[in-house]
Image (tube, rainbow, N blue to C red; front, side, top):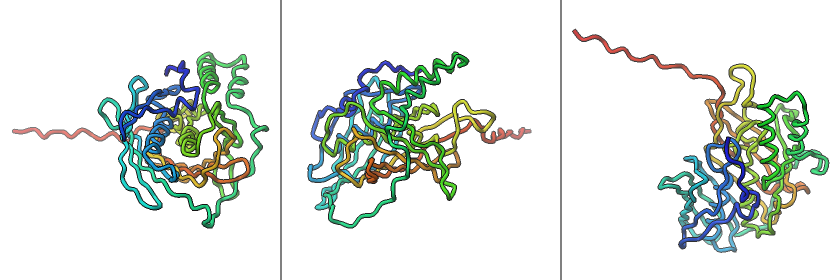
Length: 331
């Protein structure tokens, strides 16, 4: 089991911090390994890359999109170096590329774009779904505590839920279930969560957006996925509804890992210390991959960000085994 006694990750401010070591070079100060994860939480890597890129951009430009790929798992024991490339400086848009390097290997790449805001332009958005308010929803750690009250709970399950309860209680992100496995009239299944950052300082807009990646990449303990601080807030696990403790063959989740991730921002004034609604849908999964779309709303119904993520999602099914070629005997 992954080490969970990492006090530093309990503060958003610490999770985002990077040290500037040259004009375009930055170094991580802390890294977090989630429960049962194979590497550092991907959401933290994105957030630190965003902070690094933002430090190389004129503050009159605001981050509006990022596109990234996770290439290798990162170790929490070695700092990550973020190398920012100043790709383009235009009048309305600025482009930056970031390579995250650890032990001489590129583990992550991101390209991001910054825009001079144009709030006078026309706008439209999808409405926020109707869900219970955050005050009427339950914290995940409270749900786990209730499970632990069961006297018939097997010891291995008890150990697991105790670890989940401990980690969720210490996480910098509070999560409440607003709706799970909701079917729309046209058959689309949605999952919805209220989320907010705990103990977050009053950051300026660029760093609120960096914090957004911590929310967007929260792992979902109910499905025991921890390839990120987003394996997927349910992201990848929601593509097929598989579980680690699933039933028969083909229903058990054996692997999830994010391949690529995209986030678009349409608001510069939101505050991640307030509750935000995260709406998640998966339009397609197959061939060991799945894609998920996400929308992030403020409580007043403003759509502030749109996300998309594709990841590896594998069930316990073996592919066909290629027959070994038999070498013809030579006379």
